[in-house]
Image 1 (cartoon, rainbow, N blue to C red):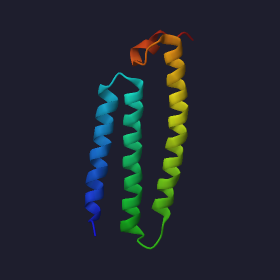
Image 2 (image 1 turned 135 degrees about the horizontal axis):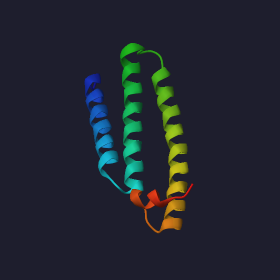
Image 3 (image 1 turned 90 degrees about the vertical axis):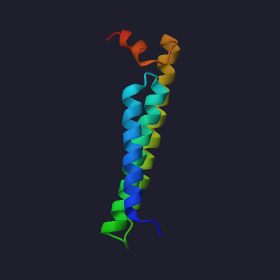
Length: 102
């Protein structure tokens, strides 16, 4: 049996890697992957806290499934926006969308 603390360490590691990637990258797809890492760390926390607080119930796991569904929808919308930006500006860098008009 794996101790629950290891899941918290893994979640914190994924969260900080995601935040670091989001802050340091200029590529829109790399920033999207970083946001997905952050959301995955939240899902791991849901499951780990469920194991500690309510070991016989599955609320944390259902919240994780809901979070995965939301992140899949968010990814689909973000990829569509990134494709549109690339089509209009011929670049997938963040500073290329600073020239957008209102």
